[in-house]
Image (cartoon, rainbow, N blue to C red; front, side, top):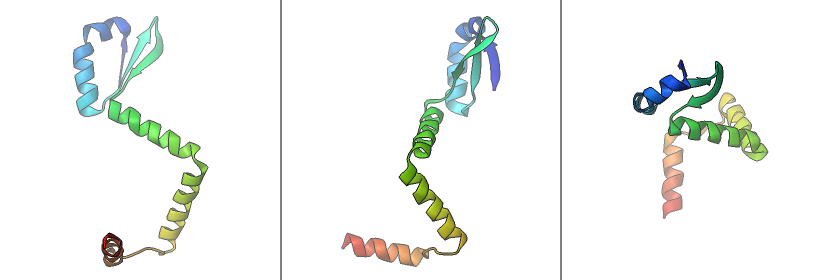
Length: 91
């Protein structure tokens, strides 16, 4: 992650945007010496939003906790069982 001034960001915006988009790098942009803005890839932003949304959904969090507990206790399905159930449902 790079920290640069807003003046430098203006001069390098195409390069910064390309690097952020391709490499999922981040750039913090300062204004008058204070970090004000962060340049991140849209995919990374959307991923963070989904994570935040999940953490705000109590039902989804409870499902996730149950899934982790099931996995830890060995309460899982084999691939053959999953494929069989999918085939049964599609018939």
